[in-house]
Length: 312
Image (cartoon, rainbow, N blue to C red):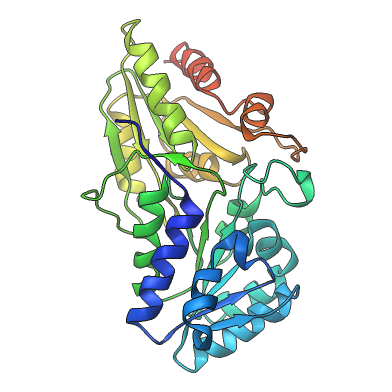
């Protein structure tokens, strides 16, 4: 059965549950609580909720201060505003001191399809991955988003997690494990390995099934933690096929593809990248046409696989 969950809904429900269980968790939002789903906390536990208005820089500084009192701040807004507008505060106040602040970038990638480049986020993982002490998470579905939310609350140190605003097909189950830094093979293959994150994991799985009909065996690996990356495991999985493709809803520079390429820097393994080709987003009435326009499709993954296989 093909089921779907909405990542931001799952995040909001998990966050509320954790706030009930742990009064040290506090939630900060920048006037977008109905989009980020922190409104659930505001409604039920107002003493653990701080509405900061449209002041992301100040919100980050307040979160840093709260963490120094023993609180576990979850800071929320659209991904683009948290990673670009408040970058200086994230760098100076949070990462420099390795403070225990959780930054949740909602409506990441192209998922805010109607608002165009000002609200879409094609560079957030690159920005956050470059910061010392920062952990970067990109779940592949709503279930994994919920589990990642719980995991980052227990983790000590700054974390950035991006979430989509749109429903995502379930690729993991309630029994699936989630551990920060771990990678998860979803499908075995012998010809080529696709490392993917976020919505592109489903695209990779569908591409693998289509190519299997032609006798091409494609391994698919879900990489929900972009940083830190388990280099030894990435190398071992890549050596099983000696050909690699990466797929992400992010600029091809600085995100998952760059992280995998860095991990394989001493390996003689051909690699290809599926992602947004160094450009900003545009407005659209629906999400699907944007994915087609930017080449974030099953066919795009298949095409890149064919290209890389010729290099083996």
